[in-house]
Image (cartoon, rainbow, N blue to C red):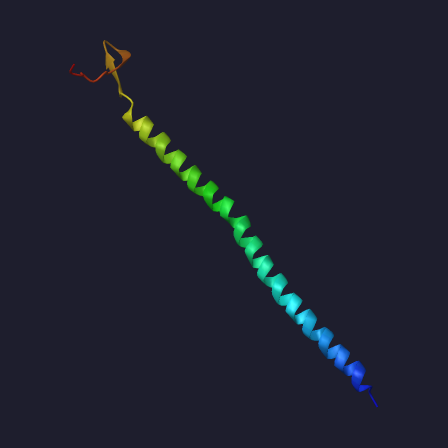
Length: 79
């Protein structure tokens, strides 16, 4: 026959371990979320940098040719 006190201790320990497992699962989820945040920010930064570079390239004066030589066309500005 099994000792009731021993069974009670086993049951109590199992409950403690279940609670600890829940706490650790929550902590792990929080750590994974926090770990992923910098990666998302990095991807956004890369996209923004690429877009800015494209915008700057398209804003540059287009090269033209005069007498067979490459020249940069400068838009006329008013004072």
